[in-house]
Amino acid sequence: MHQIYNQYYTVMEKNYTRKTVQSNSDMLTVQLLSNFIEGDISAFSKLYDMHVNLLYNYGYKLTTDIELLKDCIQDVFIKIYNKRTELVTVINFKSYLIISLKNKLCDESRKRVNLSDVAVDELDILSSDNIERDYIDCEKEKLNSAFVSKMLDQLSPRQRKAIVLYYIEEKKYEDICSIMEMNYQSVRNLIHRGILKLRSCAA
Image 1 (cartoon, rainbow, N blue to C red):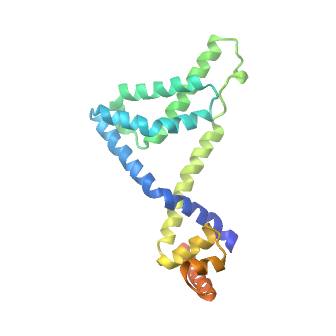
Image 2 (image 1 turned 30 degrees about the vertical axis):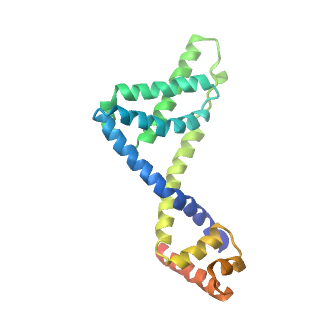
Image 3 (image 1 turned 60 degrees about the vertical axis):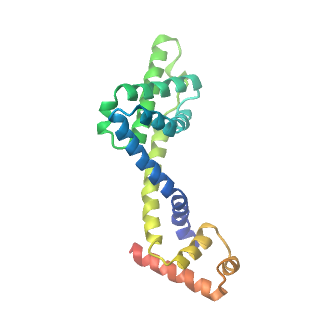
């Protein structure tokens, strides 16, 4: 049973600690994007500061050419700045940035091939297949995280705490007894009832 639920609780813990911050960040992005489209230049600067590291981290997985990456990231933001009215159709700004950077890197890499004797297979850009798959997996994880978190919200505070301690933090029953100031059998019963509740919610 421990192994069956461990994967879901691990996802839950990650989401539980970051979901509020992530939600606030997403809402802020939407608001800043709206302000920028309406002409607020300071909103553009804030969007840049919030997302430039995301693009660097993503870009490092696509190419080891740091100067190329820097140039492409700057070009992406310049294009966004010059064509802000076209952003009204953008639903997910982060996805838009990532796709824009990937396309820009590919375009610049093709130009280098055409302007030099470098073979295509020697080009310093990595396949984006795994990166795209990682991004899709990340989005799926977010959905799973939301589902697990919603399930755990059905538990009482003590049931939730006991289950997190046991499955996430991998505490022993004796440790949980000390932390929650309960006897051994009460802790086991609490976790057992929590598991039964989760099963009924998932059914």
